[in-house]
Image (cartoon, rainbow, N blue to C red; front, side, top):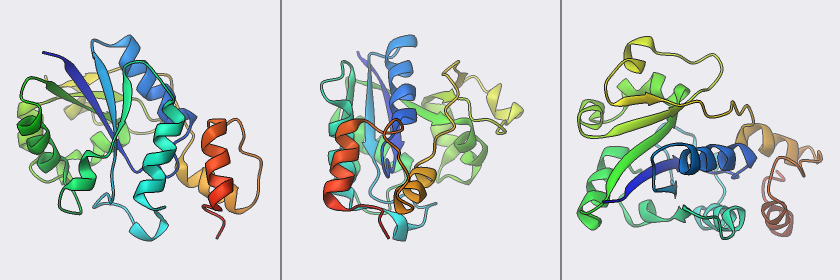
Length: 192
């Protein structure tokens, strides 16, 4: 049975920080693979600032190239929207009964976990690998047996920062993979 880490995100756009986290989880933990699940619409986020989901999926594919043990997934594109993590997990378990799924999230998401649909079920049924985000901590949840705090390098790059920088025509070449930057420029994404 393979142990698959599920890294959910809008990836709007995907950036170096996301890739470092995925790479750390795939190579420095006991996970066999990491699936970067592009979320069409996170129920807790504003949909207006989202690039088209197929563009975000394409950028994720471009960013990963032929990365070993990390792949982009459009699994949530085929589910009812907005998609809640618990529903996605149930569908994944039905589709891939021989896999063991683990959630990957930042400590900022861990802080809001109690707002998630059926979060108690998630905590009971799934392990959660948490990467640190500066200024976010939940000591009570961090000591839960399902929660594994990792030593993933701190990444303070955000997609919001990058969207704003692109809109202001700043040079972001080292924040994004070159192929992703070319795609964004070619499509004129995040310009207005």
